[in-house]
Length: 257
Image (tube, rainbow, N blue to C red):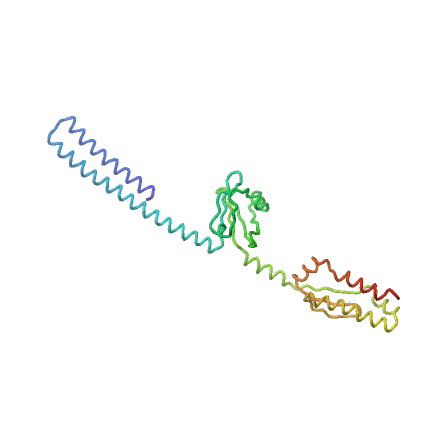
C-alpha cells in the first residue's frame, strides 16, 4: 500500500472514530434517550467500516509484498543471468554482504576487509574509474557506489577473452641477421663454410618452426620471420633463448678457424 493511500485510510478511520465520540458526547451531555439508538447504530456502522478499511489495507499490503517478492526474484535472476555481482561494505570497508552470483562462486569473503581481498580496488575510492579484477579465473569490471557502499561487478570474462584473442592475433614481423656471417664464411674452407651455413640455418629454422613462426631467408645470413603477438610474448618470457643457443653452436663451429 502506498503512503498516500495509507494516509487517506487513516484520515477516514479518524473521522469515523470522531463521529462515534461526537454521538456519545451528545448523548452524555443532553441525556437524550432517543440519541442512544443512533449512537449504537453509528458505533456498529463505523466499526464495520473501520474493520473493512483495515482489511483493505491488509489486502493491499499483501499484494504489494507479493509483487515486491516477485520483482526481487526476477531482479535477482536478471543479475545472475547478466553476470552482475554486488558486494556491500560498511564504513570501515569491511564486506558485509555479497549477492547470489558471488556466493555461487564459492566466495567466502564476508567479514574481510575489501582491500585485503582485492587491493586493486583501492583505485575505486580515489576516482570514478572502472577497475578490472580477477576472481577465481573470471574477469570482472568493477564500479563503486560510495553513496550506497556497494561494489558492482560485471562478468566480462568472455569479452575479455575475445579481446585478448584479438590482441594476441596481431601480426608481428622480425628481421633476423647473423653478425659477421659473410666474413666468417670467407675465412673458412669450403667444407667448413658449408657446415656453418647448414648448421646456422637449421638452428634458426628449427627454432622458428618450434614456435609456430613462418620464416624465409632473404639474403645470406638474413631471415624474415612472421608470427603473432601471443608468440612474441612467449619469446619475451623465454628471453629469446635462440640467442644463447645460436652463440653456443657458433662457438663450436668457429673454434678451429
